[in-house]
Length: 479
Image 1 (cartoon, one colour):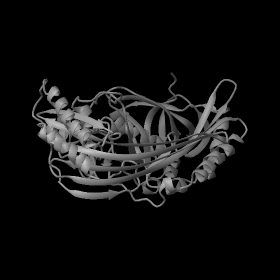
Image 2 (spheres, rainbow, N blue to C red):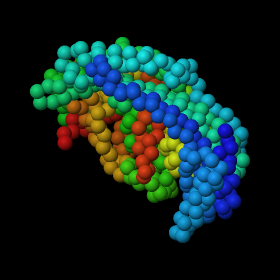
Image 3 (cartoon, rainbow, N blue to C red):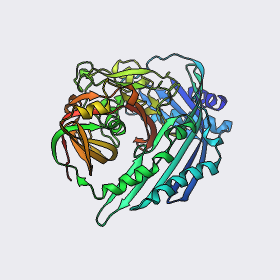
Image 4 (spheres, rainbow, N blue to C red):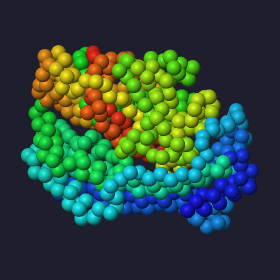
């Protein structure tokens, strides 16, 4: 199945490309939505096609086609060259690609139960049943659940000799309950606000045991209606893992994308406050802060064998004991910055240009536990499950809202509070990290909806995190 990609590469070289690569991608997707005991939708989709890149000087050209005829593949290669040549009208500095191993390889996501082989009736019964349970709790007006799975084959060919086939399997889902009061609504969700997605098969769904948590989640949503407001002021903040994962995504993951640091990319998330000359010396946070970008983590959503440039997956240190030491990069951006290529370039389908994307950007576990954090806190708030987020275009000033909180007084977890929020400035906030839970509470949280680029591409990323404690954080911010 390498032939379509190889033909497009050959056409690009014949047209004058100095380097060319192509991906033949065949993918299918299934999405199921349920609400209040009924199926809302079952959507299935398939796509197939070839995307080819051509490099001339410092300019890329890209073209894609779903037509696998010889003439269409030849035309795709030529059009990629035409676009690269047109882009070269505004020349930039030379852009040699950083060296990577040239390999012929196969990779398949480890999985036990292919999600497309589980019967539709079993999936529908599971997710409608969860919503029926939640809708039966007093005060719940809307109960929804969702399932998603992707099965993707990629055949990658480069003019340097790469021949790589990958089979990527991703599965996940989640549910939420919305309680409606006289003047407000409250929502609780499980396992996190986006659901939980991982690389793997239907065993991912079974391991999270959704039915066992449905009634509790609905009861918490209903109880929030009569809960007190989160207090306002500076105090100790404990974040459970999924909220800390989104904190990592927004205040670290996007900031360390090398194309943003270089000023090549600013769509959606802006650029970055980080400056390359400060790599290796910039203080990002406390000594408990150790972050890696690890595309090799078993089961995490940002795990693969090779990126969409043929670079092998790897584990890259990003923050070492609070010091910024690494970036997310591809072959061109790494070369410009004189850094090793990180293998972090991916595309959303065959018809999108590959760009720098997060893999599994995660915070390594500490040596404490959530119980110990609570026991050692005199006054504070424990917050769980993201509800809202806002951060500026340098990834510095932020405000997050969570679905639920609990007061902590004198080392004891107290009453539930609603509408919990917190705010901070990235390096100052991470410097306040003073306790971090250990490996037993470390989860590879998945983000299936990371948007970037114009036209927008959606990437699947992972963020490993355990609960963490931050000193003297401003909480309860309104407006």
